Image 1: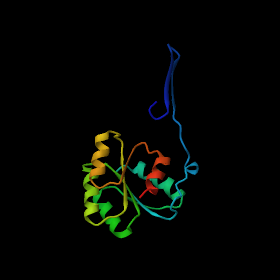
Image 2 (image 1 turned 90 degrees about the vertical axis):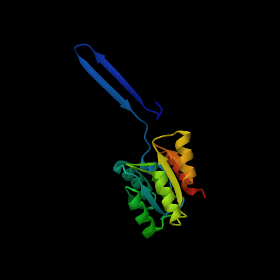
Image 3 (image 1 turned 30 degrees about the horizontal axis):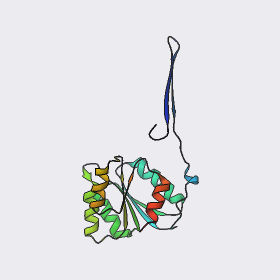
Amino acid sequence: QHMGGNIEVRSTLGDGSSFIFTMPCETAAAIELGATPSAKVLIVDDDTDIRELLCAVLEQDGFSVAEASNGSEAEERYRSLSPSVILLDMQLGAEHGTAVARRLRKLGCVSRIVALSASNSDETARLALTSGCDAFLSKPVDFARLKELMQER
């Protein structure tokens, strides 16, 4: 319900059960993130599914997208691509995104860093913002809000 969905169970003794799951979903075609077509975006997340979803949405809208699954890859891709926006997961397996953000800033990174996290706590947001991230967005990603955050400077 927090994400706008619903789960129902219907059961009849001796007849069986039905489980019904509904979830609202915007299609990638309905999401407009075209503020800066062809801008380079680096997605740093250890979850392949999240990276693929973000890539699909951003590429559909004309962004040039690169991926990294950990902090070392993020640093390498940053050096080679100089992206204008970095979408950085706060929990990268054993590594925390705040440490990655600090290292990127020490490298001289001036890209806009948007922290992404499954945790929507004020503490997580505060840690992200004090570690060098420019903005914080909780998962599941609100693509309209992502658009706003990517355009801000």
